[in-house]
Length: 295
Image (cartoon, rainbow, N blue to C red; front, side, top):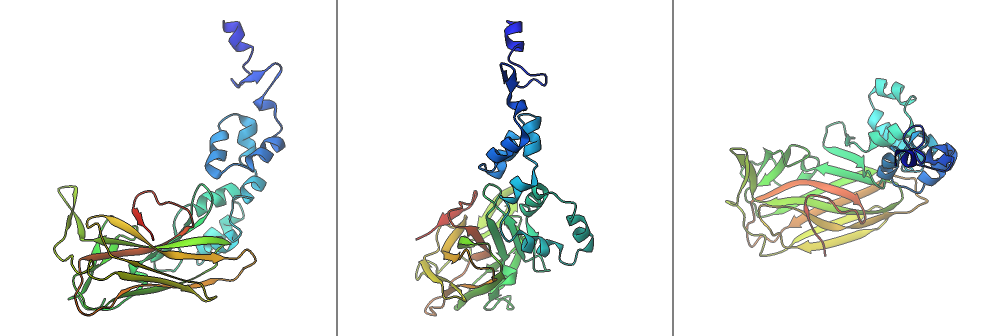
């Protein structure tokens, strides 16, 4: 029994068939196979043996996983960080990919972040409510910024009550070619914690079931999308799908994008709403945690 088992194991404990095994494959052949795998799959097969481990670190493999605009993204990370710029020349393409998969602020104020989705390398983005123009935000009778651990930006804009509701913002960014979806992340009710448990208050929630909120996006090249939603499900974070835009493959120019959400019917007040952020995802990507609402 022992002899039979040892005959199919290589010197490093790898499975072999006859006189050869997976460890005998040239790294170049292994690397050619890895080109067809996603980033997490490459990292998984790297555990098989030394040949796969070596091929899984090859620059030409990871260069195919990096977005076309990765030089631009790295420039945003390194902007104003001289030491990081000096270190970049020593980074492998795998290390660059790993770095881009972490959230990075790109506006100098920590109000806008981008990162790559790990599996496909698609670009994702989050814009804080603090980076938006909100009607009445300077009047504490209507709006307050409240701290919360439930936001990646650690605070959200909380509306107590108002007649004229309007939130607008814009993005000027060099996106790689592809289609993208925009979402507003909203919450009816004020979330908080008591004795370590999550609670929320519905005290000021009203007015959102009377008339729908209008969500809109437009790009400088003429793309537009509009969605209408009644805000629902108090106590839960909801991603409301605004619409999609497309960046053509031949484009190497920044996309200028405007987005908004409004409810300006002044026949009634509305309140009790948390505005966290605007999110940009590759079209078809499904966020893990929050509920998504789309037309």
